[in-house]
Image (cartoon, rainbow, N blue to C red; front, side, top):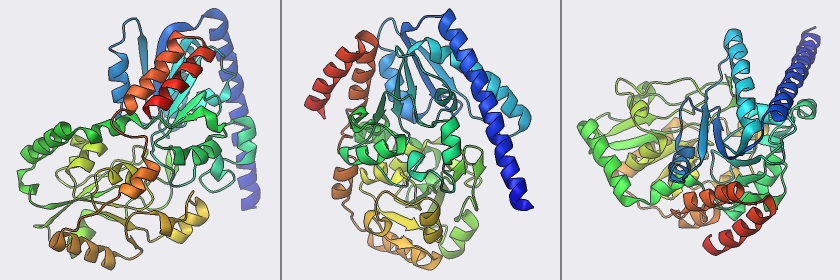
Length: 410
């Protein structure tokens, strides 16, 4: 009976999805008939945040320097309540107008309305994915797996479709992203990821550290442990336990006078306080990378950016076998990650004690050279060059000119 109810629920969901798709297509067609594409209009859109995030900030700042461009920001997190979902659908109808009338659409994640329409050929979509490297599988790579789209769903909503280009951090990531997005490899460009440029600015890093020390002078000499767990589930649903480490557990084993645990949650996950300080509310993830001394994660792609800083990384993975079964990775996990893997808390605590006492030096150059070799402090410059080529020239000329320039700069 439970199985039948589950199947009925899936059929109802599919039916509702078809209805939503029908209305989205109608609305988009109306906008396309009534309004022309504005050659100078760029739309930057994301589900991940309510305001412009690190993924887009460098690109946005550079585009603002160009005269004549009209830049529209569409940043709004979706919510899980029925009424909230209803209002969000209305908001997405508004988004369809901007999608129908822009020359370039920039994304950093899954973007539902784009997959329901037949996009105008004049509009070009560039997916500046929020994660560097190629780590855990996603998109079409996890079709019919838990947390991934079903074959039936993909027939109605072809996720990651309508992209003209995707941006990645290295040539090594092109194959996995081609599979995940179901895109030709030549449309995936290893320009580097714009937000990593800040990790090459020593003056900026020092300013962030000074700001942090002024805000929290008592933490200056402590080992600052950044805990950044991965996200499990869909936009509105987090599978299983959210946080395996917290202040109480952490300081049960480690003396608080020596260590400070800073928890940074994924944007889709519920807010999780880091204690009375709430440090992650005042500093961005990249800033927390800069001020931290060591990273603890499980399966988060934050390891790629962190490798550029050459600081110790520890992997706390008590559910590794289960995660491999549910999601899996593009590379063998045990051979791939640049740090010790711990399934129990005790050896993880020992690792942290050794870091404090011995202060080991690490070198992740071989890892970063493989997965981040297009990130050199000039990624924003290359991505903006691509966008402007799409704005200023015909499609064929823009692609040709960008490919020539890209080969000379990467």
